[in-house]
Length: 283
Ligand code: CAA
Image (cartoon, rainbow, N blue to C red):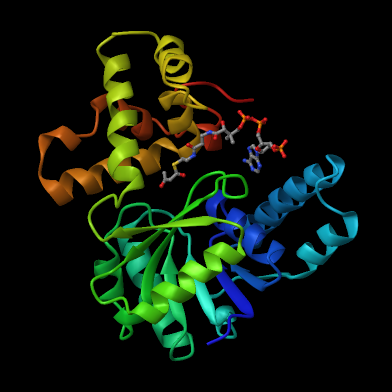
């Protein structure tokens, strides 16, 4: 099936970024979110990103308008019925994703691929909620989506080769470099990244160092573009905690236990950049 209209569920930092790169690649994009306010915020961010690129001379003003013109918004999943491919980038909550996939399976045409941007929930578990498990796949973008080159593509146990190939080709069309992973908790990216972030939180919890020093060590000592605590704030501390819980539940290995300090921050509503406070404060 040729993909002309691409659906994205969620207009947050991940969904908005995915919609932006899909529209920039020439596809018509339908973004679904539950409220007009969320959609306005998402489109506003895309507009801001594109305007910055125009100011830098990286994008033609006409092309910016054309990209924005390819974006349409809807507030119900039914609005995604015309799509030939849909990717879900809702909150990292298993029950919510299950419900979305049950509904999408009913709404979307037969053969339409249903991708999920989940950062760690098993693809097989999501696919099992549909009658088309062979068409369900992980399409895991990195934050910030317009900048990061990688998309991790995760095959569920039932995902067919056609679905995998089409997803791979779409990622290339979006200007990304795909990498293939199998369906184990955290896949590749978060299996490796999150224990490092969690360990940085433990280092803070145990007063091994101040937050600034922990981040400086990893930035200047290991050439990471951001320190692990800054990066946790960018990703969202709730997302980091949810991923650690998935790793811990999936492997039943104490090396993946979430740091109590991470949980404490999340309980306090200190989720990082999106709430203005995490390990650092943001104006
Ligand atoms: N949206 C769009 N563009 C952005 C952006 C955003 N949120 N943030 C930065 N940029 C752009 C800037 O406009 C700039 O573009 P130009 O090169 O065209 O000028 C470019 O990115 C570099 O930005 P800055 O110069 O402002 O800052 P920087 O050099 O420090 O880079 C960064 C910022 C790209 C975020 C860099 O710090 C970085 O790579 N950090 C690590 C990010 C990372 O590890 N992401 C993966 C997280 S894990 C994940 O997402 C998966 C998961 O499941 C949790």
